[in-house]
Length: 463
View 1 (cartoon, rainbow, N blue to C red):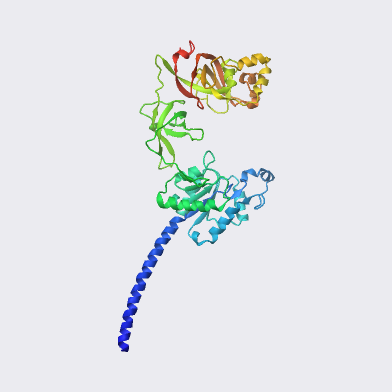
View 2: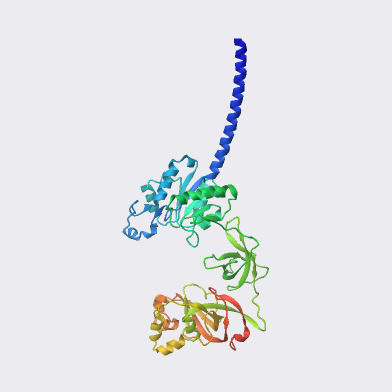
């Protein structure tokens, strides 16, 4: 009986062990699966900008301390956003972030200050990677990718600056990093936790590059339709290096790069040409570029029309130039630099009144002009007005000037502005004449082209 029970017990024990083994294996498998899901739900690297993201104010604003050669004091001169500090403590203590690394990516020029402040705030041991140097934010992230061994889609980035010249979210999102735009800094915890929720959905669904979590929690993904065509104006051409830039969209849209290889065979483009193009992304460089660039019109002339370059000015200076008073046009940019002496252009009148505080009146009166004479010079003929091409101009030389030269009374009267208000590059106006009739033209920045009827051009200008 004891032997029988012993054998039976062994059998039962074996069955129990087998059952336990199968249960344990299933449990471990489920745990492993849950672990993978958990890992994918939390970024493996979370990166913070510093100025106006983790702390305030921006370091460049502490000019008084800079002049005194004094380092800023944490919690006095520079303060962490309260929510940012709470988030850091959660990340330090929550097992959820056990497999997550943390990094700083800052373009500040006050690198010594930034490192010192991190130490004062007790954050040097919290951050696994620190990238603090001025320049391109993409350089920071390429370094982080190399140091961490992680892909860009494993990262989450917080920054107060979205796009434009000093923007960070847009160029970093181009790399494939999900970026969070927080223009007022991390002032509340929901910014961080909401971004984590978005990251989970983004990571497990599409991981599309060029994705930004906006300040209001919405998502922007700048996907490129390879078949969509855009139109724009050639802003700049470098014939030596075979590339140029196209201005298109609104004022916030960045100029689009193009290489001559994107042009039709034997095509010749000039600044001011209107073109159509598609946008592609260089997979090697991660940058957008125009491809399949085509001239909207060939710029060829016929018996009835002529293709003319056009530039725009606002009143009252457009009238002063058209009436022959203004014989120098000054700009800080290089708009007229590419054009040879003798180039003819149409003058377009912009929609605004240039806000110079009427200082041109003082300049004109210094030459002995009466109020009535000034009023005549500031006026356009009847029927000529804003939004129209009103005159044809022949350019002279373009040359650089010093402030001292611009402050010469004769120079100021030639420009119609005081020296301090004038641009450093002056272009001579050799001659000007009103068109036979005004021509409605859509104004654009810089020099652009328009196909205009020949019969509006004064006699002798097209010879």
